[in-house]
Length: 183
Image (cartoon, rainbow, N blue to C red; front, top):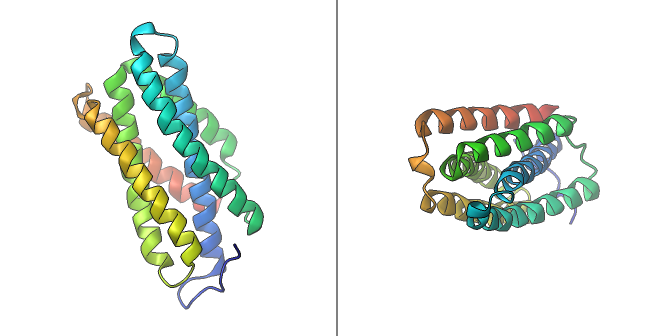
């Protein structure tokens, strides 16, 4: 699946940035879920949360594998921030899990909301430019929405300090997106 030549207003480097940042985002999401699972799998009463998180993690792993393939096929340089995203993602996941199930779900909701918006803007930019990548982004966007909805159903908005927690996580996600596009 080779990228089409860039259309006016869309450069090859901006397509590379999209793939790089999406790869970094899916990598970070996997790390967040791993951090949450690392906490919940050790607590008998949290097995249900661990199972839900494992299911969402599996979806993110599939997304990551797709972007791994696109990075290789399209010769896109991955972000050099991966070691930092690994630690930050796992740490965020573990910290929110230690705060409780609702805080872990609030983390998922916040992350998935930012990613869904990010994918929506990418989808619009890819219209008529790279239909193969647009199809992937659109499918993954729908799956991220399902993760967000699961988190809300599990009580994300009832987490202690939800507005502040959600705002901080969204800020961090948006910053990571901007950094990963370029670095």
